[in-house]
Length: 117
Image (cartoon, rainbow, N blue to C red; front, side, top):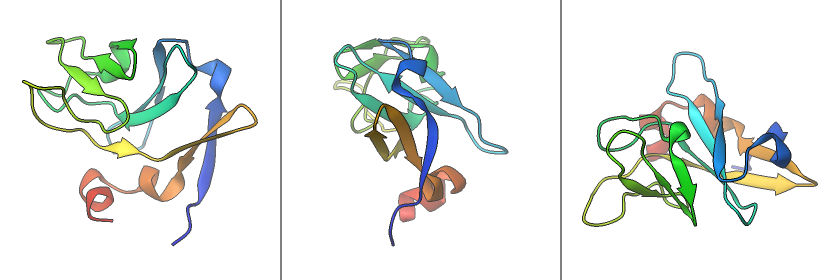
């Protein structure tokens, strides 16, 4: 199955060391992150710990600190850094000509469907 890429925003629409939230109807939002090297990552906007809004966390390196309990979440995998445990869903991201794309099928799937795909 080939990816159906959907343009979300331009790289410059995402604050450096920050995020932008992609609203989804009837599903948890997706947070798109940009680090200091302009690498782009996309995760479900929920910490695996207590569901905190990762989009409101502080980005450092290739991690984001959850604003609720300061858990560090790896942006490339969605997994918490030890000693914390658990993962949040990550989304495929593509950047071309300064535009950020997400996989439309992943965006439309519920968390359980996407994990099974």
